[in-house]
Length: 414
Image (cartoon, rainbow, N blue to C red; front, side, top):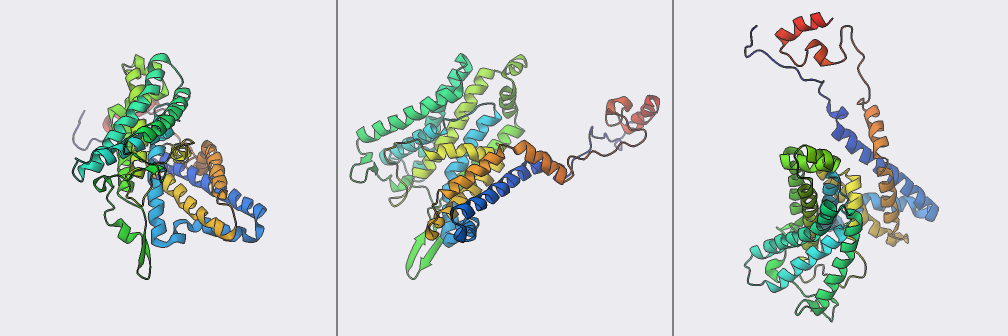
C-alpha cells in the first residue's frame, strides 16, 4: 500500500460557497431586519406627517451626508462608544452571560479617565491619555468583576447584580464629582477640563472631516477613538475564534457543567468574561470624555447612560459578532445623525428611536431571516444523492482514508 506525496485526504463534507456560508446568512439576516424596520418607519412617517414622509425618509437615509464632511466625522465619533458597549454586551452573550451593566461600567470608566486626565498632570504626552484609558479599563473590569463573582460562586443572576451595580456606579460618580476637589466646575455643572496631554489625538482627521464657510472652519469631534474601537473588535474576534482561551469561554457559556467535566475552570471563565466585558464598556466612557475644552463633558447623572443600553441592541443587530457589531454601530450612528435633521421639517427626532426599535424587534427574528436568506441564496437546498452515495463517509472510508485505501473499502461497503 503506497503512501506518497500524491496521496490526498478529502474533507468530511463539501466546502460551502460564500453565499451558503453561515457568516453570509447571518449578515443577510441583519440586513433584512434593517430593511423591514426602515419600511415600517416609512409607514409610521406617512401616518404622522404624510405630506413630508418621503422627505423625512430621505433625510434619514442620507444620514451623515446631510452635514457634509463634518457629518461623516460626527458619525464616526458617536459610533465609537456604542461599538465598544456593543462589544461588551456581545462578548458576554458569546460566553453565556448578559452584561446589562454596561451603563455603570461606562460611567465608572469615564470618571476614572477624567480623574487621571485632570489630576495626573505629571504624566508626559502621549502617555497621559494612554494611561487614562488603561486605568479606566481596569476600573471597569473590577466593577464588572463583582457580578461575575456573584454569578460564579453564589449563582446570583448577573442581570440582577448588574442592574444594582449600574445605580451604585451612577450615584457614586455623582458623589465623587461633587465632593472631589478640582474635579467639578460648579458654574457649568460639569467636570473641569482635562489636561491637554490627556486629550485624545485627532491624527489630522479634524482637517479632513470638517466644513468651511468662508474663513470659519467647523471641524468634527472625531479622533483616534474610532481606530481604537475597531482594533479592539478585531482583537476580540481573534480571541473568541482563534484561541484556546476563547474556546473555553464559549464552551463555558454553552454549558458550564459540561465544561467543568472537560477540565475547564468555569468559575474563572465566568469572572474573566465579565472583567473583559466591563473593561470594554469602561474604555467607551474614557474615549468619549478625554476631550478638549469645547468637547464633551460629564455632568451630574440623573439617569443611566444611554450608551450602555444602546450597546444591547447594537450587539443584537450585529448578532454578537465583533465585526458585525462594528458595522451595526456605524449604521445606528449614521441614521441617528440623519434623524437630527427631521426637526427641520417639523418631525420629532424621536422618530429615529421608533425606527431603531422596530429594527431591533425584527432582529429578534434573526433565525427566521437567516433561514430565509439561506433558501434565497441556495444554502438551504440539499443536493440530491447519486447512485452509490452513502449516508456517512465512514461507511465507505471515503473522506477519511487515503484514496488508494478508500476505493477498495467503498466496494466492500456496497
